[in-house]
Image (cartoon, rainbow, N blue to C red; front, top):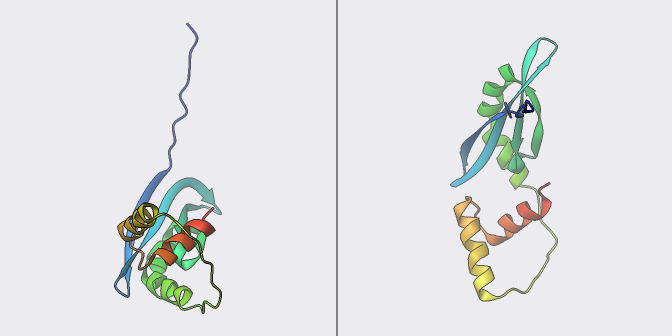
Length: 118
């Protein structure tokens, strides 16, 4: 019988919900097991603050202290263009349900986040 080794994903992701201005924003911290210049690294993703990068693990408390401000600054960016689409009522209801479930204030915010996500 052949010896089969299973690949184990050692990455552990923690999602933190950041409250800012009556809305909730998810922030994901993934422990990557990477060591850079003798320090443990983690990967942080917060689409609302335009963050998707590695940080030294010791920097996370400072990031968490400032993340609400980073989110609010990013959300204040002026919007000056429109996109209009037509959908069936049932699709609109479903999209709105998803938007509310994930803490978005509007369908527009939800659809923009989905369209711009990787």
